[in-house]
Amino acid sequence: MKYIFITGGVISSLGKGLTAAALGTILERRGLKVGLMKFDPYLNVDPGTMSPYQHGEVYVLEDGAETDLDLGHYERFTSCHLTRRHNLTAGQVYEEVLRKERRGDYLGKTVQVIPHVTDEIKNRLRHMGQHENCDILITEIGGTTGDIEGLPFLEALRQFSLETGPGHCLFIHVTLVPFIKAAGELKSKPTQQSVAKLREIGIQPQILVCRSEHPVDHETRQKISNFCNVSVEAVIEEQDVKHTIYEVPLMLHRERLDELVLTHLGIKAPPADLRDWEKLVGRMIAPKHRARIAMVGKYLGVPDAYKSVTEALFHAASGEDVGVDLVKVDAEEIEKQGADAFLAGVDGILVPGGFGERGIEGKIASAKYARENKIPYLGLCLGMQVAVIEYARSVAGLKKAHSSEFEPNSKEAVISLLPGQDINGAKGGTMRLGSYLCHLSPGSNAQKAYAQSQIQERHRHRFEFNNAYRLNLEKSGLKISGIHPKGDLVEIIEIPDHPWFVACQFHPEFRSKPDVPHPLFRGFAQAAQHHAQKK
Image 1 (cartoon, helix red, strand yellow):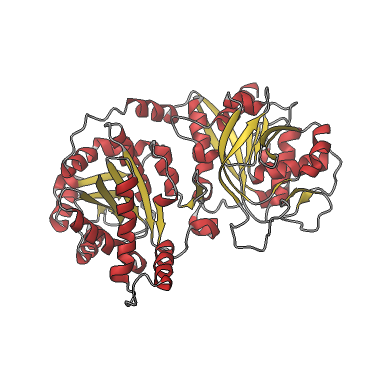
Image 2 (spheres, rainbow, N blue to C red; image 1 turned 180 degrees about the horizontal axis):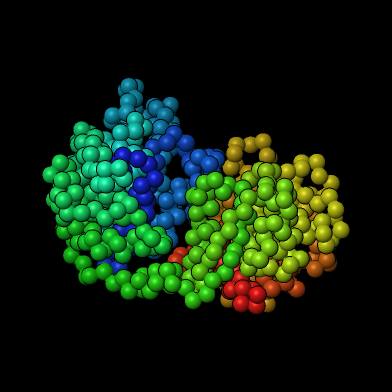
């Protein structure tokens, strides 16, 4: 196996994850088997307990691992199947080192960052080398070069590259080349300083990927080449894309990044066939139809909080040749001003997941507005729960219906914890995480969308549909169209006399890809397009 390490400099949020994923896209289309993983220097064991305002969304894998959102990019851009071993945090590293120290594995030695912490990081890479069935493993290192918490990871990679020998490891450094408007020119000094930091550690990047709002001219590339000790051909431009992030693989391919990578690693492979990707991007840029879809959320201050949801929506819409005019609506504003002020005229209403009581009545009002006005509705996780609460209150006569998450003493808790769950345990300890089986009702919208009778979907939630109210709600017209057989847990609900009102307890957005849109999102996009055409 060959190894590619992607680091970042100058500032955070430069797009290392997208760069890693896009490179994976190109290499796969050259016939290579690619694996991707992420090293995160923060001390949290995983991002599961982090606020979306701090970290963006938590991406859940098939095995239930709560991971960094960049793993979502990896799975969307490539065919790789990731597990918990593909995301390593400093918290996990230190936790394991301390566990070994308490167990006596170090035989009384003083436990130090070097060699014990760095050895633990290298062990993960060696484990991947032994068990990952791929030609190239791309590893992104989170944070910014120079951050104190990232130093053990960079030192571990420096050691690892020496131990594996020349030609087996490649360092790509993603950096910023800002355009100073007052001076009217690009500035290379931040990149020079960032690479100097890496070289102080003992790492010489072989390729520099330069993020910029403007084209990086030859003179600037030559200057960066001279001061950073890389060939001018290895100074790669990665300009801000105009339309969609799925343009990035095409951009990097034009810059011959894949050729540089394979030459350095001594790999021969056929030319990249990106024709299907070009068609996909073309549909996204110039769709034939348009639909206006409202997403009613509570973490709208952070674009990455709903990253997988918005990407899955764009995947499905482009598959139907529909462009989405996305209207982001704060659920708390609906509580203040009413649903009609924000949702009038939309072609679809999407309510994503979330935790906590804030904005709940606004989400409930959104579900009611979609039901009463026959607007296509897709509810995800909490979006299903609020739809159940609204239906129970407005249709089934349970005026005080609520969730015990928000009203612990509710007498009509249509959403509640399962018997035996302990809410006072460790955060995440009572959650249903990862992939679970779901049986679909024949003839339901869900079954028609999937075109199969049973499915596997990823979950991240604690509270469930309360089966004590199931008969009452079904008699009132609510259709239960998806069931997890173990425990008879409700997974999908529908309203039959509605153009498209489907809500699920799981997170379908985690299984959507640009070239393989998720069936539920596709069904929702079709319904929204039909609504727009009727209108």
